[in-house]
Length: 573
Image (cartoon, rainbow, N blue to C red; front, side, top):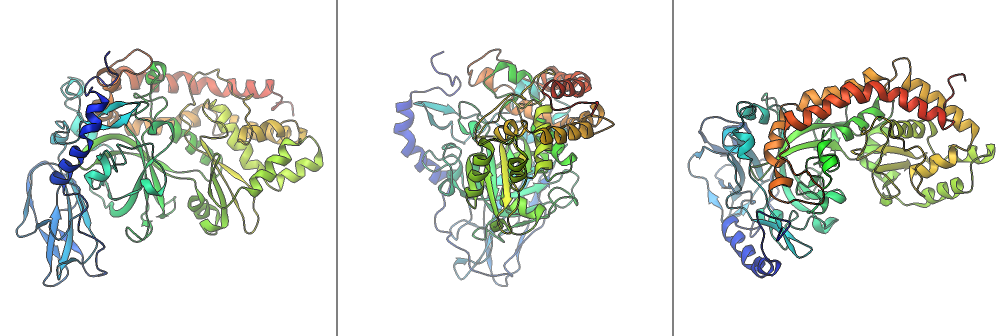
């Protein structure tokens, strides 16, 4: 092939030379971020919408009313934040296609209250989306333009197995709509999607987010910050479907999202949530083998499993995501196990904790962390050393964390990726580990990762601890608890946690197939074959059937045998 990006191929030099022109065009089309500034403080300046966000089949007239007397209303329908120079509301707005409408009160020539956003989704129109008018590339990587892809694949939309189900598929699970300045999303210079590998506060932009329930129950609408989330799948060649992190700060709104996002059992306030897009074992992975194993559930299953074992673990659910009114696919909405999550579950405030995402310190410092690993690397065979490590490490929680990862045969974790850890700093507490990004699990039923080791990782702590007979005895007790007598890693409970989600997203996967199932075949053929059109019936359902019918029924006995052979479990004891 002349270029790995076949649909939108072009010379990098041509794209670079047009970048400035493209930015100017976007400003003309979308209005940019000019002029709206900070709104005046006015608790009463609220906008009433005659129709709430949600799904619609027929056109309607949308009336807007400000609670501030003698005030005007300005609004936009392209994602940009309204300014005083935006369209002024004079009569009801006709809504006859998927529309993201943002409105604000204007008083004395200035924005006088918060910007409010509502998304109106017409499923029939979503199935025809092509991305017309949106950028044809999402930045440049290795000197090659990154091909944009927006289309709902007609092969799926018109397929006899799916065409009658797709509209319902879009309404089969909750929906999240993210709305933001188009330039902040796709501009070659400042757009987060066009510069997905940039991290930190400088790569954060303002956004609005809504949760829409298909049955019409109340969701929420809030203003927030947004960043690209994750590691490997930031690279556009690895995945064009990036993950996001939403940050609720006072600069955008109330400072927290106050909503029972994960039901009555979960916490009700959030400083951040993650919109996971999936990378390993997905239809967009570079490996043909992993694309064949796509299920979208493994990481959620791993986090659910640690909670089933009795420990705090990030909750999550599945939702369809829209960006500025464009359907973006199936996402896993979940908590991020950083210090705010730990504090919400274990007490205190986020400032009380040392928190880390693998080798990256998020809050606090790494003094206790380094002390713990110095102790571990010095050897833990003796009773004194073992007693000392138990003062720094929540041993029962750590044992269960390791058992979950060994059961799943996690093949993608090391010192720098795919786990979180935290300890309370004041008063001094013990480190706990949290499952994260467990997508490389539940693969072959006889996989064994018990021997893996890497310094400053949970695997290193385990390898040092297993030399101690008291640790091996406790580990064996936990194996017995969880892998026998109906424990959470016996066949039926383990399968049921997976079955719950596979049933939940069975219809939604059709929409994911229409959005991204053709990408490796038609847009970017990357690394290994086969390059197929990935579908629910031919690819996703067979993998779910394999896991429920073969993997879970056999894996418990295989894992017990592996633990026994490693000297970590003796039924006689």
